[in-house]
Amino acid sequence: MRTTGLVAVLVGAAVVGLSACTSSPKPDSAPSIATEPAPSMKGFMPDVVGGSVAGAVGQLEGTLRVDDVSGQGRVVPTDGAATGWKICTQQPGPGAALDGGQRIVLGAVKTDESC
Image (cartoon, rainbow, N blue to C red; front, side, top):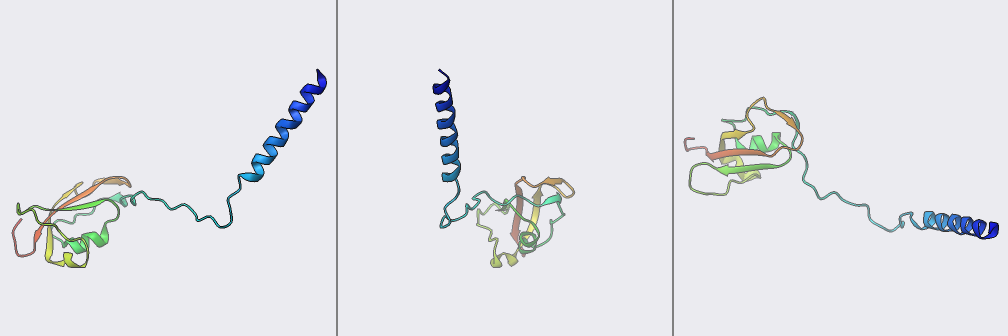
C-alpha cells in the first residue's frame, strides 16, 4: 500500500515537472498583438463643434465615427482630405467624462455648407 502511494506521488511530481518545462514559449514564436481598437481618450470630451474634422481627428483618439449630417449621405474623410469639413454635432457633449471605452460620434458638413 505504501509503495503504491509513493509511486503515485513520484509520478505526479514528474508530470508537473515536465509540464513546467514544456510550457515555456518557443524563442522563434512571435509575440501576440492586440486586435482590439484603441480606447477613447480618458478625461473630458472637448468642445469640437465648429472646428474642422481634421483637427478633431488629430485631437481625439479611439473609436471615432464621423457622419455627414447634410442629408446627402456622403462619406466624410477622416484623413488628410478631412480639411474641407466642419463639425456640427458631437456625442458625447463637451465636458462629458470619458472613461476610455466610449464611442465618439461627430456630425459634419462641408465647410461652405451650414449646419
